[in-house]
Length: 341
Image 1: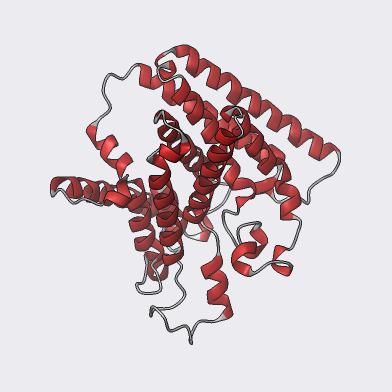
Image 2: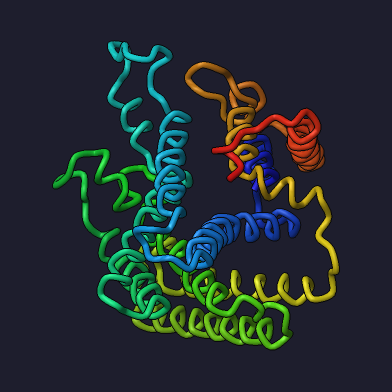
């Protein structure tokens, strides 16, 4: 995530070409970062929630979850705040407001976690199967994404609401299809909570790999069917073949990590620290790269002007800075409870 944003901000246009195999690999992996990030968020949130063996109304994870939702939404909109003053919007243009309403990854994850809480609530009240409900919910979001993308929601709804429904509003991560990845993660999170020791067997990794391979095959068949019928007017992000392929890749990667974890006796402390500070790292590195209404970023200073090696060096430097920041926070016992929980 950090290296992807850094390279994307600094790499010059002449190096963004399929003539460079390394760029092709980087571009492919960059496209997988968001699905991995969202799937993991859904898995972690649901696993922690379901691990508390109490009814919804007594589960302390409900309040923590709601605070998390509000925090993510707040930070997401602050990063795109349209005015350098708090309350004076006299100099804010229509374009500034449109940029402010754009739904980025933090707003999407925040909203998706709220949806997960609602699903958990109604599933418990209606005595439904949690895993089945998550699967059906994710499938509905994925399957309706092409239809939702085909509608100009700005013509029917206020801009802040329309921005959550389709990319035509300028949103990078609208609900359709991106929330589906978060809810898909909840399927795995629910399963792990119900079977807490299953990840300690190679059978679990094999099962994940089989499901991931199945999704990849479905993606191939979907692509062939769309090609056969000449359907090419679907937004690539919402196309069935893209969604199935990304889900397959995420599950195959999860299977690989699960298998490797069987061979690891102890997770390095640094990885644990980084994992606890992912939101802080995300916010800080975005501020450095893209700036804000109050501060300039590297994009304004050197945007798209670096060579491949310079961009690579900048990415390594950015990752190093983020790790040092995390280590300093731990060293001086700086507690950012909301940012690391």
